[in-house]
Amino acid sequence: MDWFDTAIRDPSDLAEVYEPSSALVQQKEIDHLDDHCRAYLAVCRFVVLSSADADGRCDATPRGGPAGFVEVLDDRLLAIPDATGNRRLDTMRNVISTGRLGLLAVLPGRGQTLRINGRACVSRDPALLEQLQAVGKPPRAALLLAVEEVFTHCPKAFVRSGLWDPSSWPGKDEQPSPAAMLRDHVGDPALTLEAAEQAMIDAVTIRLA
Image (cartoon, rainbow, N blue to C red):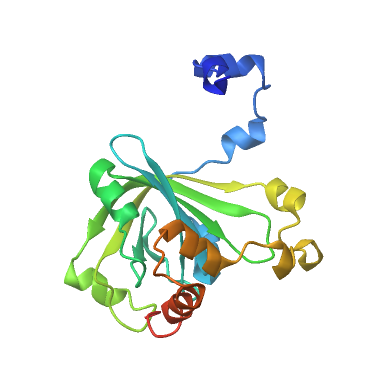
């Protein structure tokens, strides 16, 4: 059976499944970065960026850095420096393709997240990059996000998952091995488990900056 054959096709049909959101939820969206948002981003070290290409292929990627690495340029514009990564450049390609970006900012131990959506572009402007030295040097490029929608997201997902409760975390023996996953996903018989483990160590030591 193909479950997609029975999927909801019209967004209006969702009203048959869900009641409307509360007035509080509908009214909490703003179109700029106020003092609360600035304070949140000033201590934020981790965000997830969401994007899609022109064909609708989606991507969500984590980005991290020192507190305040997401730079608020003004009330409606922020910049995310591009730190050294795997150089797939999925997010940048998508932003160049569609000019859109979503951001989910997360604080450790806190259930309420901050969501920001809007127009976006990839910048190599030297004056901008000189401002963005969260990792100790100017990045090669940065993402600019022109704010259109800002709202806080309730903590229910964190409560249900127990994400911040160490007693709920799976033990290492319950988790798939990161190195084994890398080796098997690459599918190269010449890549040993030891080599995969070393590559992962190198990525967060000698190739972090």
